[in-house]
Length: 125
Image (cartoon, rainbow, N blue to C red; front, side, top):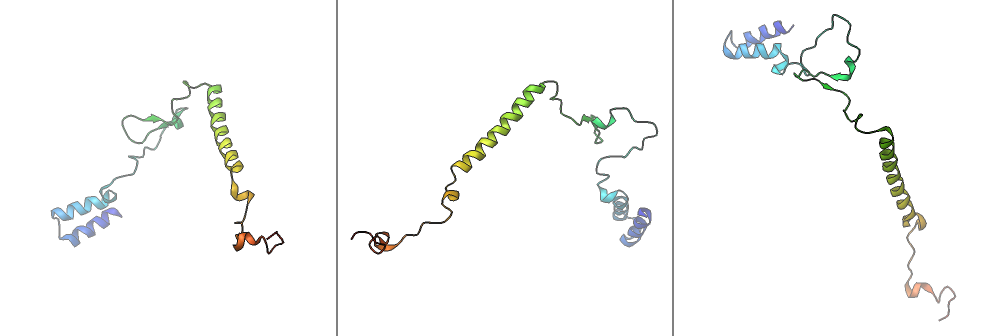
């Protein structure tokens, strides 16, 4: 299909000139950009056991999918960091609830003239 399109494009662009050849090659290779992640290699034998742990994006140096932080941080240290972070956000939320004036007074207090209608509501003049 791309060959037919490039042939049509070369005829439209004027034969076999430089512009026609560049248009033909661009149409053949995804507008000149190539594949998004390099060549796709179809496996012809069984994959190694931990093949899914390697991120191979077509560069010469494939990298592991998981960070290499696991050997440096212990299980209980990671649990302490997790509990510390969660308790910080819980304390921040409780502080916001405790200091929330809008929930204690859900409406604005009415302000009346003449000393807040003290005399009109039965107060001493």
